[in-house]
Image: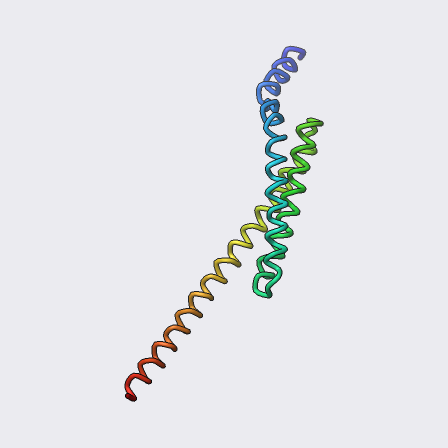
Length: 136
C-alpha cells in the first residue's frame, strides 16, 4: 500500500508544471499588460468624443480595465506565487479577449457600412455629374 502511494505521489510530482519560469515572466507581462491597458483606456476615451466612436470606445475602455485587472493578477502571482492569483489573471485576460473580439466585429461592421456609404455617395455624385454634363 505504501509503495502504491509513493508511486502515485511520484506521478503527481512528475505531472505538475514547474511554475518558476512562468513566475519570472509574470512581472514583465504584468507591467506590459498594465501599460497597454492604460493606452486602451485613453484611446477609448478619445474615441468616445464622437457619437460613432463611442460605439467602439466604451468596449475598449472596459477591455482596458479588464486588461489592467489581469496585469495586477499576473503581478500578484509573480510576487506571491499564489495559484489563485494566476487563475484570476487568466480569467480577467479571457474576459478582455472576449471584449476585443466584440470590438473587432463592431469595427468591421462600421468599416463595411462606411464603404457602402462611400460607394453610394460617389455613385450619386458621378450620376449627378453625368446628368449635368448631358445638359450642355
